[in-house]
Image 1 (cartoon, one colour):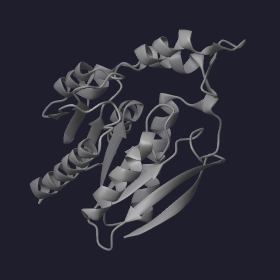
Image 2: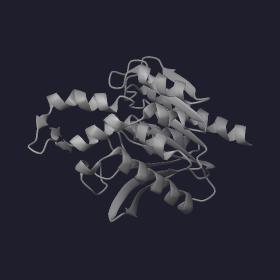
Image 3: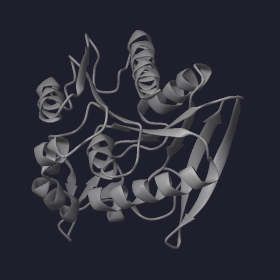
Image 4: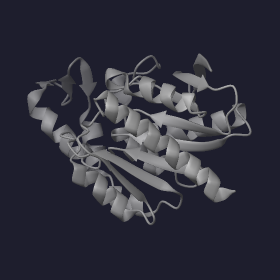
Length: 249
């Protein structure tokens, strides 16, 4: 397996990513990180997940959204719409640069909400939503009074300037409608002890998607923060991808 850093020019910015490529692969998955995250994710969730999936024969790509991690841009520019546009561009670019692969998308937390919109009409083989943040507005409302208020109406959240514009956008999301519009194989995975995105949020999203597979992971928290849960998560994602491959043969 080879691991390399990717630098892609996008709209006068640079998206920085990591590619994990087995010697032979027929399928590739693009991982989308969550709010305040990056392509490594909290306690290296995405690093661990990418390695496990690549060891099972899947090519894995993970990028920092603009304003996050090592990609250019400022965190004040973060928006769901912007990340949807970046994801669609990444899929188009990666498909062209790595021909012959069946492409899958997996989004974590806020990245799951982004993935639902980006997946529509993208020609993907499957979509997987990991603890999708259907309560994004509630999360932002919860941190607002705890953060340092800035004169421009934004907040300073552990050194990141979170905008009122993002909060307003989160309040206008039509998560259930976006879920109901999906027409491809979808799996929703959620930890039963998630305290950030309540377990019921994932269940509601899964129920709104025709034919979606609902997979709870008993005892897992929001970041699947135990070794055993991360192994289960990788096995669950890999199995779903392989099953969609067999179903389409």
